[in-house]
Length: 252
Image (cartoon, rainbow, N blue to C red; front, side, top):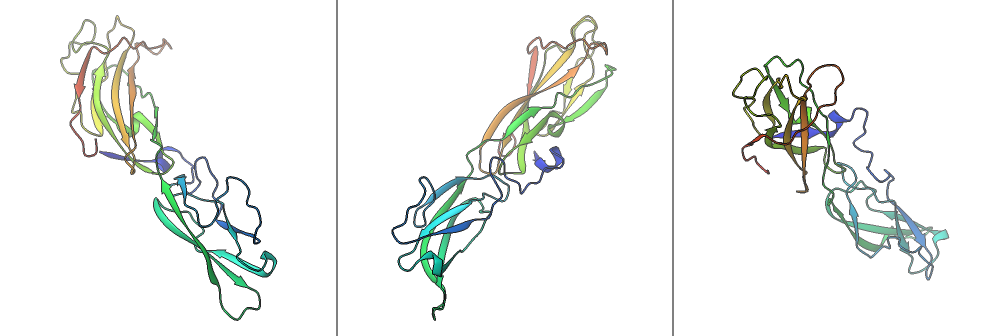
């Protein structure tokens, strides 16, 4: 099984920078007694559920807290955590300190923040190519096959589920070999660099399964091409001629 690192696949990507969000620390907005909170905002005392956006968890920008007495002009309100917040539940406390008061900060309100990961990884076919067609075996790994993007997990588990070819094992014009797919495992396979000389290129199809730390699953495919020639002719996937199943893998 292979743990595909997002940072290794997307050079220059900062794993702390959230996908679909901002990396702003949580701040508390003070509201005078009887004041209004903008519609849809998180109010202290309420539970909030957010989607994980970075491998470190999620960022939340603002929580609103209403004073029970006094005014915001003479009070300082602070929040117990600024984020990012890891997967799971967090108790967020807001405290208030009144200027010139003898007592220290007092608890104002408490909220539960729940960070979840419900979005499955995204797979992109790298379309690796085998050349020349010299009847040699080449090792193809899941890293060679697919790029993986996941907002919350930077070590998505990726495995092969099957390997197939659109040309028969031993057909006319392909070098008279019996085995084209060997040593198919969870994270690698050996493919023969050959194609029918009178065909339209060979296309191997590799089934790929990605599972993130929260158990979200994506099934996809990678296509490995053995071109007919180097003339720029577009390879044609003629459909599966035969298929080999990969062994069962942990978490697969």
